[in-house]
Length: 134
Image (cartoon, rainbow, N blue to C red; front, side, top):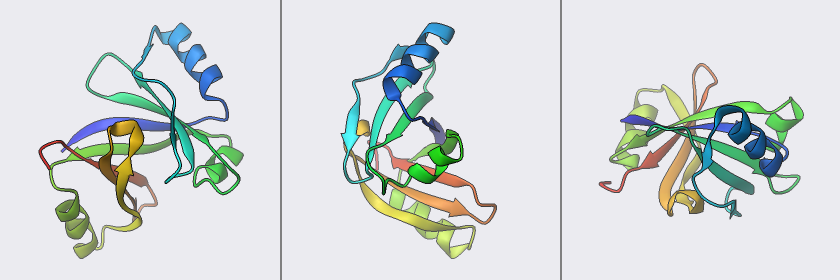
């Protein structure tokens, strides 16, 4: 397991990415991707390591990130890459450490790799992405 990216919610992908690229000298990892399964627009920024910064903008009023944005946006979740997503989720639920809040689905912004979201007993939102080896 390794840290894959950090999710950051914003109301304007273009404006936030331009600001961060200018401030920190970052480069965009890919173009903006609309993920209708999660009702968000996503832009990945390369921060010069294996870890990326994922900028997330709600697509509609019912987007799962809308509430976070209404509270000011900003840091949203951590995403860890795992070899076996199903086994990881099973272990976490068995140990009662977290509950799955978004079942595995393909993520267009990550080459359609499977992802899932959990909320921990400490109320942290964590995403898991299955590696190519999964």
